[in-house]
Length: 584
Image 1 (cartoon, rainbow, N blue to C red):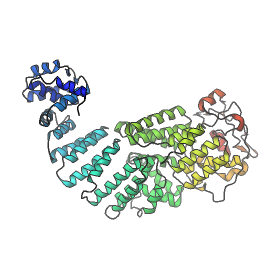
Image 2 (cartoon, rainbow, N blue to C red):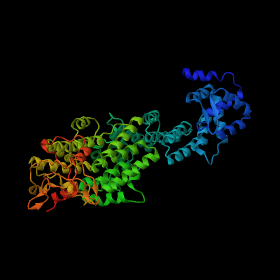
Image 3 (cartoon, rainbow, N blue to C red):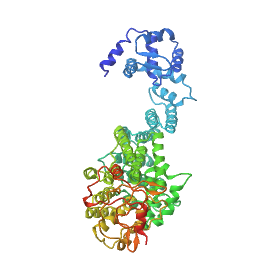
Image 4 (tube, rainbow, N blue to C red):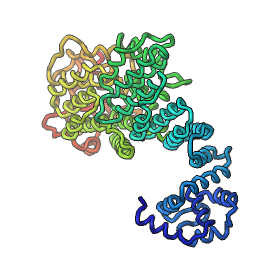
């Protein structure tokens, strides 16, 4: 229904000549406001352009200058809706006729689509080409609109189903989850071939993953893979990895990998990502590293371009912080250029994750704020693992515990953050229990990341772990190329007998829990951890190992919520102390 403001604008059209109203209708049908296109269309309609333009401008609704501008968006809407359907179609048809198909094919296709009244396969094909062009320029929302209109204009049934699926995919990529679901609902009872049924299930699964309270995502996506087991095994394998990747992208991958591995088909002739995951699960990291490394380092078809979430996790699992950081930077850049909110949110969340590990709290908070703003704008599901990690690292108990209670999170992420939080607060029994639960999950990367918290909690509480040795998963990992995460992959309980099980008071001149920034000269903060004092030598507890000591002011800047010094929370250890803890 027109608003009161629109009715006011419409009243200005009553006394206009037919040429002036036609000129305004043509102008309202072109959202770009290109005057050259408007005058060409007006001449094609044989309008008295000077008189019509003067009369239209006199209403105050429109201004003809370097760009044709309406006085208000509702004025454009009022003019467009005042014309009947035939007049609007005629305006779009004229604009399509004067638009250059070589320099502006997508705009021409859109005007042609608005000018037809029924199915038109030629126009639908042109819209498909326009969608491809828009996608290549980062216009994901425009591509979705083109494809949706192409599906509506499709005369052939199979083409209509395929274009509807393409449109749903494009709407998902641009953040239009509700529109994508409506498109799929419209065709779910239509006749389809097996690949189309499989793709419908795949998209249904993606939508379910994106809904906070819908746990049917894995079911749909695994069913999609099973539909193709016999007719297209390669695509079936891809769909299985799609399920795991989607779980990683939205932070809800717990249990998905186990379901995939239980139903995975036989090994392919040419090893792929699924083979790497199968080897990883069956034989451990060391056996899977060559294949996973090859997939990550493939310059011809890099994994991160096809499977960004999985590439991030695998780089972290291989303890390659530099590779992880490079992939995350590319994800953020690709997300911004393509307009894909899923890719951009993943990149920003991983930027925050990486920044927390580096101790760059300001960058972490900035990335988290931007990711949450995009989630709100696109009504996407909340992702909390980066916020939880930051709260745990800063020792903010209430905030961290509140985030842990949120639904639809990676279980291992919650347990690891709990171990990190309680180690920082000096509650080592609680930290030990949480770290054991995290490692028992055996999730990619996060289980290994919990090992340092397991060691710290066990050492400081004087506890012994059962002889099952869950840490062997990480001790078999490849030697990492960079020092920032290397300590976590090598620090195992084999050296406990050489580590004093006491809690040393923290000197006031030393940093608290956050990671120290690194320079060419080494860490810029000192440590007070008793961990690292070696029998017969090494670094003594409470001794600064860097030539540069940090002041209490620096420490408070790094961690605003530092617990009181009465119970000596552990420091985040610089590399020199971490190496001393694991070498004789």
